[in-house]
Length: 601
Image (cartoon, rainbow, N blue to C red; front, side, top):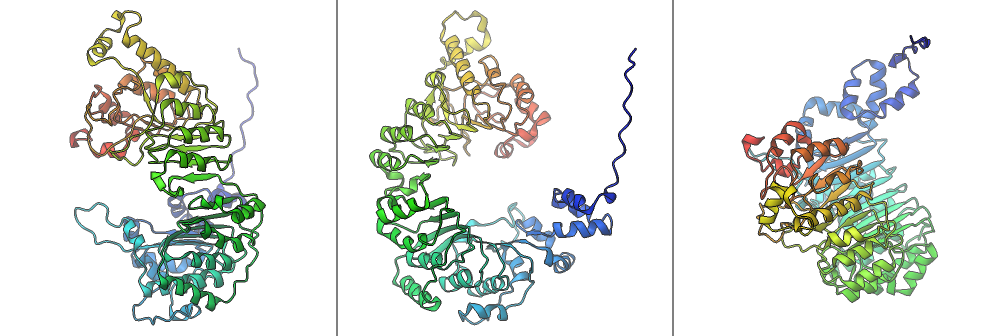
């Protein structure tokens, strides 16, 4: 008989309303908006604590929310609580009109300081972060399920002059803004005074896109930004027009000589599309002289600045090294030849991310440069680089000790893409340099027997003679599984690509020589990949059945999506569709659910 004394019961937890206000505030900070909406109705104390947090972020970013918000009750609630808003995102012009009313009868005066007196609207006295994208809402159609969704093509359109003035007026009324995100282009005459005069406390700036602009306008902007700026992200659509040059001269005269403030808080500078020739980078020199060694991230479209000694010396003084390079950084873009790619990759040994998507001519010289300088490399993208061989890929994997992401699959679902692959034999024999991979997206080519031999193997594997083609294939597959299992941090394992149209077994994009992904072929070797979240086996001749799905559910507890199993056009396995729909519908890729017959869903 157990004589162990029973421990006394724990005292009951105090009711939430008896907790100190500070502790209750910490709890409320972790609640999502729907929960906060319920909590404000509990009592006056909860309402007082929850209301500021419920209204701290205001973002109507889809048509459904927009429709619900456009009621008298919602607008009255906004008027009462606007003082709590700290983050404001204006996605639709109809919502923008509440904060920054615009009228096409406004004059075309460009006196930015006067805008605040011409426009009235709701003010947000505690506003810290502001984002504008300003889409027009399309009219709702009966057969259009995407009503109210954003049309990205509108980002290419200039703002209506009256709307631009109203937005400028709203910004002027909030000089304490710390973060500004503009996704619609303003005219330089409006934008530059706003950023360089009226926002003295600005810390983070996103401008996408600036069009049409010249390098001279970018120079004026940088040199006149407040010294509080910490992060600058600008995308520029260049123009060579004389008008833009005259605009820059006029704005410089209006602003006066740049003060060349010390930008000792700047940590990140990213500019896309602003430079074409090595001499263009010289315009950065005065601005770089105002920066300090706090500048850690420097990303400029193109890497020609590495051939400009003055700019390179300025960045060396700041301790800045080149860490990222993409296909668009080469003078010839995706058409760059292998020697050119190799030469640019040899410029530094500090690469952290190399993105060679669609650089179809990348080859041994590029691979050699990456292998020699892969110490810090964390992310590699080889989509469309079909001249990179299996052994090339393996040599890189054996020379990159900090690699976290390898992408060698077409993620844009382009039917014409020709991606590299790694052979099962090469993968099975490689020695990983990194044990930190979280994403492996690459085709693995496995020798598989002919259709007749395979059918024999599937129907009576016990009758196979030792050393048969089928037995050799499965033995090699087990070696591949064991090699993949060494990457215990994997969260994304993508061996196939989803395409919008139905593929046939004869299509070149369909993978016939691939892993079976069955327990008989050694899938259970991957039981240690407990962090796996995404598995993509689309358009592969894989044989995942109900037994495999049950094993996956037990072994990969964090899995949230499987692509390519629900719809397997070529060799569908019996019972798979029913099992997923009955047990793990949440695994299904949304694109596959939409292509199922109505009876199945």
